[in-house]
Length: 112
Image (cartoon, rainbow, N blue to C red; front, side, top):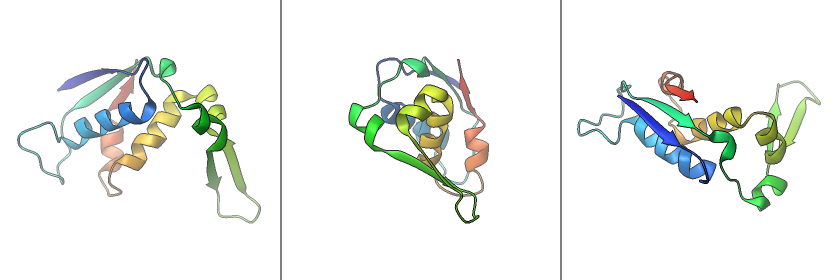
């Protein structure tokens, strides 16, 4: 099934929880945690979603390549201005279980 979710004037976290429920298949009567559902989600107006002002300034995202001195940080404001879709996928990735089928589930998220 194809679901369309409008992210305008809602927080990224609230939208991500809705998308995660659909990707996991918790809205289906035949829910099974080990099965990838055929549900695809189209997220609309992700650029117009809201983030708390405190989170935009205080929270940072860290990445590290494994080499010495390779720690990079960026604030949520910078990430949202550069690419809100990438930030949304990062939030959604942390909401889904860390197993082999997480990648397959993330492929079913599209943006409009």
